[in-house]
Amino acid sequence: MLEWIARDRVATLFMVTVGVILAVGAASPGFLSLGTASIVWSNGLVLMLVALGIFPVILTRNIDVSGGSVLGLSAVTLGLSVNAGFAMPIAIAMAMGAGIAAGALNGFLVAVLGAPSIVATLGTLGLFRGAMLIATGGEWIEGLPENLKALGARSFAGLSVMGVVTASIIILLWVFLRSRRGRWFMVVGDNREAARHLGLPVKRIEFLAFVWAGAAASVAGITFASQIGFVPNQAGTGIELRAIAALVLGGVSLLGGVGSVAGVVIGVIFFTSIDTSLVFLKIPAYWNDLIGGAMLLTVLLIDGRLRIALEARDRAARYRRGEQGGPDLKNAEDAA
Image (cartoon, rainbow, N blue to C red; front, top):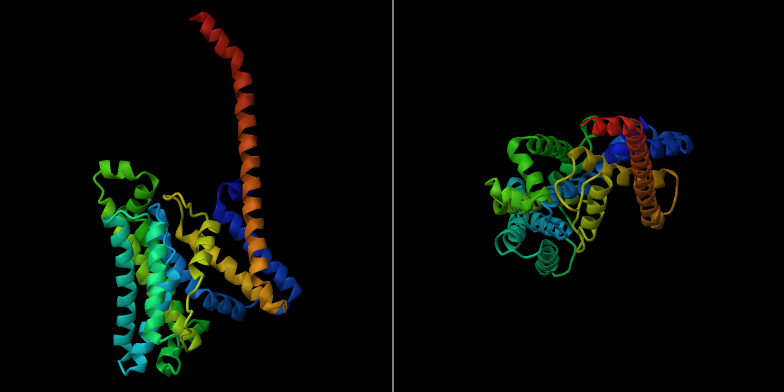
């Protein structure tokens, strides 16, 4: 079992997450309940959607740090639209359109113009954030209709409409990445030149990865607005960094080509579980970042030490096999 955990980052994170949940449950018995699980899932929806959007981008050995501003831009588009009297389906379509257009711009800058993804998305982060503030005049959008808030309210089995939508997106992405075309994203991230020699449409794949990130961030913006019932002028600020941390924690390599949807989901649940457990333990909210960062470092250190120990054991085993095979190899050489 130790070998399985050491070889699989997702397994390490899963075991640590279970350990944290059980420890908090021992200190606060009410924590271990279906109600708490529903709260953890609901609280993690926005981060989950942003992380799922960035995931294919990182698989292609790019990065997108504009996810939070795309979330905010989509939420503002939705809020302004519904308050202007547009029907809910039209307002949602406009919010989705804003996110997809933002992702397409990122994809155009990176895949077509060849701009480094970190530079391009840092630029568009400020661009989208500025457009959002100009559209609202720096004011919060309040008075959102009840039918929008209903999308984020937990109802059947503790799930909201947006919770079901998020679960569907997880399944959709998992199925797609296991398909032949989905594996192209990993091939591009693993070796771009080899992918070109194989005839894969590398630029199109990179472009579509950014479009997907924009679409997922727009769904996150809709979820955000529906859950809190208003849109602050700093909606989504900094969430992309937390999403990238969850991805790395879940075993997604920033060098591209490596990662799984399961790792993304568990990484996000880990962060959300930490935040929720602090509430149950009555720890002040300003401790969240410190404790979350400490837990992140702890998981990475445990994972690293396990891998080092496993590699040392494998090297020792290979050395022993080499010593045992030495005389036989010498006799074979003498016979030759």
